[in-house]
Image (cartoon, rainbow over all chains, first blue to last red; front, side):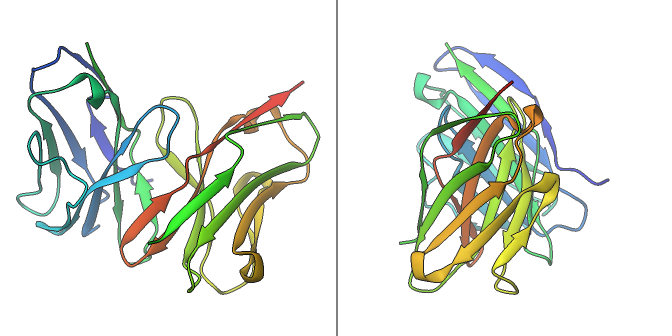
Length: 112
Length: 111
């Protein structure tokens, strides 16, 4: 069964360091999402891509976060510099023609 | 703006008892509605979805949800809880291409 792949699963870093997360969506899925989920809360959308174009990044803290999907397939989310408040689960999801979102296992970030 | 409210951040039931997790949405136009389940340190798995075809929606693992427009609700139920149902449950609404989640309800199942 096709899955959304994410790496790394776990990342521990010190504040002010740079960190990057990678996502490979289900093959053929044009829409890709990055969500942030703080412990005890629901996921919040950071950025949405349609192919290689950003559709919605209104909630992305652009002073330190960046996201790209250069070839319209896999995507990278970067944080530089990381802050204590960035500790969270970063979830990637993709969707095809059905509109159903398929989520990856997530990347859990701990900033010390 | 679209919002989703889950009543009760934590629900505890005994094994074999009815599970009821509450979700209300705010919208004048009913959105597509979803319930997801999340096990510790894992991603979200779709339980069921409402897309206006039928008000009673059956999902996986014996869960179902009923869409009630008059109450703007989409509560999740399961007749008999199992230990393996212990997890975090999220209600979500979709308008356009964006999925908006509620705060989540943690379900505990006691033996």
